[in-house]
Length: 453
Length: 105
Image (cartoon, rainbow over all chains, first blue to last red):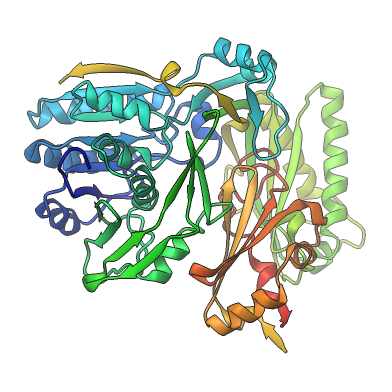
């Protein structure tokens, strides 16, 4: 260690900024005098809508409450606070949304600090020239990236690695607000800059970004302290009801990952083959043996979403055994009849039936045959605009309500609707269209703005 | 000997591991059970494909992870998370076919 610092403490308040945390746990963390407070604020888990639309998936009041604790504590202790993947998806509108909240808190609580804001949006022309140069490749079975897909995406972000956050800290930022970032980097950039082992720092960040989820009982809304040392790191639960065990920590290596032993990220991957977990008093755990395998040609991951149309839904149920017994053929006929009526009107779109009680949860992965006395039919229609989606839903709903299926004896109406109005305009629909690696030096993409508050 | 997976496991779950893939985690309670399952390779790509009645090539891999006495499977999502036609954005309710597995070890 070249800096003479032998220990670095990182406080992780919550798994996602806005999910909250108990005040007592946070206070316990602050009493331990952390060197950094870091928090991950995003995920692709809630689906493509948030990246595509630029809207946050966390509640503004919740985010403001969490941030007020974090900013005030960081200010009082004179330590940095780093926020990764601001606003849920980390595109410019998300970052600016979070930035506004920070500015409000600074003003309301009379805090003054230097803030580094790192945008993660990627220029479309840059991606297109990378496509031409053969420097992109697909993940997750997607096709190769093409210019049309790039043009159609509403927001395209890249997952930043350690460099941009380190750079923002070097520029004197006391608060770093980062757009889309590889989750561990918010936790790891500072200690790595001080000379700590990148493998251990990133592995610690990988666990801390989920706060107390790796403890038992697990929680995404409770605080954890990570203590990084030369040869290992330690995880400290900050609530007396939780502990880290070998099992809980090892099991967390599986969570949401395609491989528990190799965790890829910008610049290389963590190798967990030789990792040792050692249980310590007070529910702590000591972790050592993590290795880092650097990538020969560094890549960053691009994420993009495009709008596919608008959705309308209607929820209905049936309790009629004669109808339930032939639900598939009834729905198929209703769909055909509705589509032919719409065709003459020139309305185009898609119809999906989610049949709960049959296969509403698993669709084509369902292996059981239905055995319900009642089923819920969720009608979903998609069209290029809301007006058409509404029109299709309306026709499908009325056709289904009155369709005279074979053997029908309940002739007054086929469905029970719980609500009036029965149809709900559900707004814009997006899909993940870009999930590709881009070969590039990350310093060429992520730009930092410095603001004095 | 036959083992009912639901009796041997403490965790059987599914979740997205990307917007395009699902991962199933099975954590086995007793080390002997885990070692027996592993030795017999009683959970493999074919077993998972049959449990879900999907083509073998849709199951990307099955990994035994000793540190957690766990078995992980990764499969293609039928529909990408949140795309039109999806039924489970988080992928957290796709585990049920595994609850019925009986393993020969």
